[in-house]
Image (cartoon, rainbow, N blue to C red):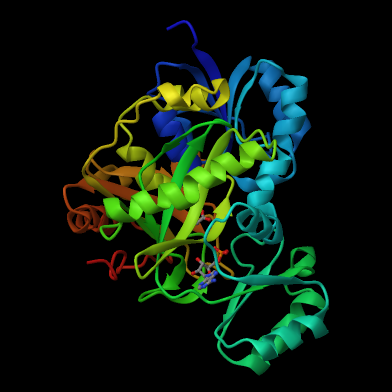
Length: 426
Ligand code: AMP
Ligand code: GLY
């Protein structure tokens, strides 16, 4: 293979471990590095623990030192801060998967995303943007609840409040706009209409002109069973969600994905990366809840294992604008993943707990590490979300059963996981 490139993945979560797993199998990938990586990624790639994805100079040094030809950016922060623009200038031949600063605004600013959708007729909840609490309160008086309040900027998935009571919503508005509830991100506020339906996630690889749809997924964000309690980074996922049928996907592609890709192109935004469409099915019609400028976590841990075709080729196609030639081969089976987390997460939790039992887990289970670190020959917890257990079978319920059986073999102090992933699916 002549176009084999040494590859660097930025990030340290389960998503990045799944990316490493997939890219390690690619004919187009030479040496594989991950910065900073975690206790699991080093089985697939060389960890660069001293390189922070948010430090462009450190990333640039690593690119030079390791002769990197393909860079895959996992998380949103470096993209929203413009890592692509800066590195593309310094390394004209580097293939970068991830949009520039302008395109990343789809995730970096709710207001930008809403205006973009309005310009291109993409279905989403009606909204208004505020910087002044009095105006926002007057708007709440005019509309009916539940009230959906969104911090404009990045808030690590925690910037959305859904409040039934108008008085509570009005006081939350003051906390956001005048206080520091979400820091800077909350000083501009989007209030939008509440949409009632079931959520799902669609992912597209985009090369600026064409797109390739990846497998669909549904994630489980709340910490508690029955979707209760605080929001987390994600506690599990299923791919495909059984209610996402062909008829719904045709609407998604025609009404949402194509107008998004065409809209980006029409506005001169050279978007080369992944678009994550957070969607909601309202009576058979899809609406956009949010855009992200990257793959989801833990959705990636079920989406990527279902892709049989060469993922390195897909990444290079994003850069070379050759996605129209890429034929994606998707496994018809279902994948399910369950995240095990540290007791206390998403609030305060302890780190450094020894993890045992992984060697008892059957080889068919894919274990994607998130918050783990090596300590000599031991593996220890090193974050809130610790590991995702992914299994594949012909029905998602069977896949889940395999994942849960695997988790039963694993132990660390304070281990917690939701036992009801998929509970709401037919
Ligand atoms: P976001 O950060 O925009 O994805 O919002 C976080 C969560 O809030 C979503 O996953 C939904 O569960 C919920 N949400 C956001 N916007 C709406 C809306 N307009 N109607 C109903 N639920 C929403
Ligand atoms: N699982 C949701 C996210 O990655 O934002």
